[in-house]
Length: 320
Image (cartoon, rainbow, N blue to C red):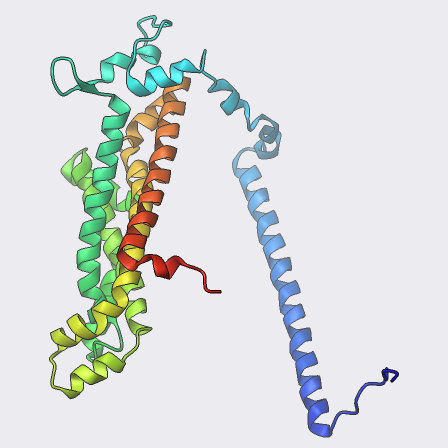
């Protein structure tokens, strides 16, 4: 039987539906074109502004973009390992560029921690303490901010506005404020990262709570459970896996944030990285960047392993 090439005749309602779909598709294409045009205009304006504020040298300097990387080549590859583990350099001329052993942190008369590893541990400690503080307070505020768990609009609004204020400013801005008050060191960094983490995790947590299944809560409410019992037995078991995932994600973010804050005097490895870059110490810079990269990968892998242990392997097994 030969197939007919004629289109089926549409009814009046069918033609209206098809015309409506064509109108929507045309409108979507128009909005896409307008959005792309606005993006190109904004990008062109940004490049023009960058060029003007850079005395017209922005585009002139682009060919020299990789010169900095070329200048960061050490005299030999083993210099990176010497800088990382505080080993003496054969090129030591008494300058700061090769003073690797001077940064050792001696645990005993003969046993020491290399300076960069010690500072990296300090950075991880700042991130870990800040994340734990952020999780504890964000957990408590989230249930006060969730619409399905807190019927009082005043308490809900206060909790949400409070978390918005905490995450309104970047960690480095908050750290600058506390560094001016409490002086240099890891304590202002912990306070700054903790405050921002409370606001960020609190928002993520209460959004998870608002998307949770309310049937367990209805059952507990029916048997006379109070608000705390509804939270403990009806809501926490549902949202805990997502809370753990966000906690581990935030830990990775806070390791990077602690490094940035260290560059402005908040302790940790960030300050050493800033000094080595500004002084063009090639081996030191590459050693710190490599250590940061390995640390971030290690934290990511540990997070994935811990998430599987807590949630269960079945949650990560593909269906079918």
